[in-house]
Length: 197
Image (cartoon, rainbow, N blue to C red; front, side):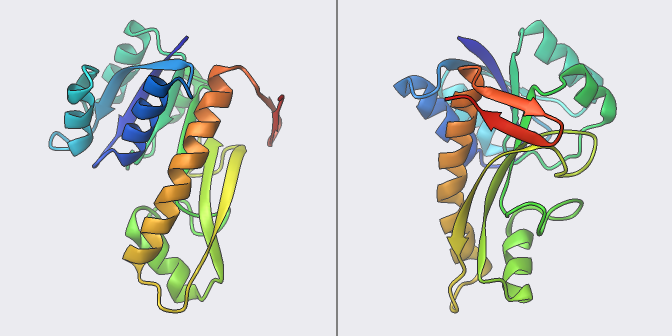
C-alpha cells in the first residue's frame, strides 16, 4: 500500500473521491496527509472527518519536509491553486500528479483554474472540453499526460453547469490514475505515459 499525500486549496471534492476510493479498495493506497495553503479550506475538514492528518502550511520547504516525514510515495494536487517550484518537483520527480479541468494543452497554464477555465471554454465557442490528469513538471500544466476524458459543451451551458459535468469525469479519471500509479502500472517515457495493464 502506497502512502498518498494530497495538496488542496478549497472544498476538496476530488480529495473526497480519493478517500472514498481508498476505503472501497479501488485505490490500493492510503491517504496519509492532506496539506492546504488556505487555512479555511473545507478539504481540511473532510480530511479530519476521515481521521487523516490535516495541515495548513504555506511554506514550500516545510511542505516538502512534512511529505518526507510521512514517507509519501505519491503526491496528488487536487485543486491546489499554487504553482510548485522546481525544487519541489525535482524532490519528487514523477511522483506528483495534478488534475486540471480542461483538455490540456487547451485552457491551461497560469491563471486558468476553477470556473475561469469553463468560462474561457464557453467564451471561445469550444464544442468539447474535459479533464486531464498529468504528471507535474516545472511548468504550469505542462507535464506528461496520464489520462483525459471528454465532455460536450451544450449551447445553454454556464460556467457552473459545465463545471458540474466536468467534475464528474475529474473524479473518475483521477481515481483511475491514482489507482494505476499505486499498482505501478504507469510508465513515463519522455512526454508519453504508457499504461501497463
